[in-house]
Length: 337
Image 1 (cartoon, rainbow, N blue to C red):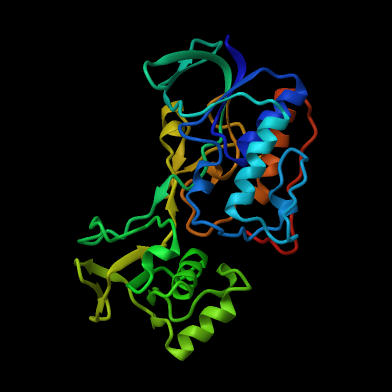
Image 2: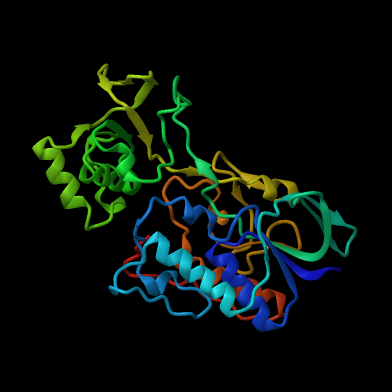
């Protein structure tokens, strides 16, 4: 065996698990198809987390920010790099796992594909910490692949002086609309419901977006869906044609459950929710465990996130080390994520 455990994924909880295994004296190898914290790196510059710093800190390492406020994308990625360096973790980044096979009764063979050639690794157990936000949801309408449609965006400056239709009604869409407006874009917002869902929007953003929509500074198209996109307009289900230089869908993400499927994990329903024992995090495949947001498959309403996923690490380590006590859920009176 190359190691006792393979960790697939190097997001916050994958890194926390690596530290926990190191502390427990359990040998492991860790892989990620991209860089550590990759999906967080998608966040636009200076995006702040919804969760308080103590709830997204990992491995017992405090997360401090200069202004004592909630961490930004940049601050959190810096923090993750620091945790990796502090514990001397070796993470095989840019080395995607492309095959998982049962290796008799002794364990598994993982095939990875770094630059150059494929490699095989023999492991006794596998932990899939692959997250739940592999790629943006699609609108499923004509024109959504046009070059001016940006499900990912990098800087509000890019949209200065242009007409932008933001699609979506939850936190990401609202924050995007506000930042574009503040950067000088002419912003419209299309969302499916009659009102914005206040519980799904950062509390410091809701009054601002509400005021701007009431004043008409941001044009709101409530109870609408996009039905088609052209180079110059967006057709809405209400029949309106909205002029738009850019279209920015912010309608959530889809999980990539291909590694679960490859390992033989049962996936249930349209969300592809994996089967696992919540007491141990072991799936229906003995020796294959889940950690983090992957447990929810593709989540419509996010119920699993960093702050309530720390317990997964404790349960996996308890099971691997033979401890029998049950690690209880952490129930927050006011969940933030």
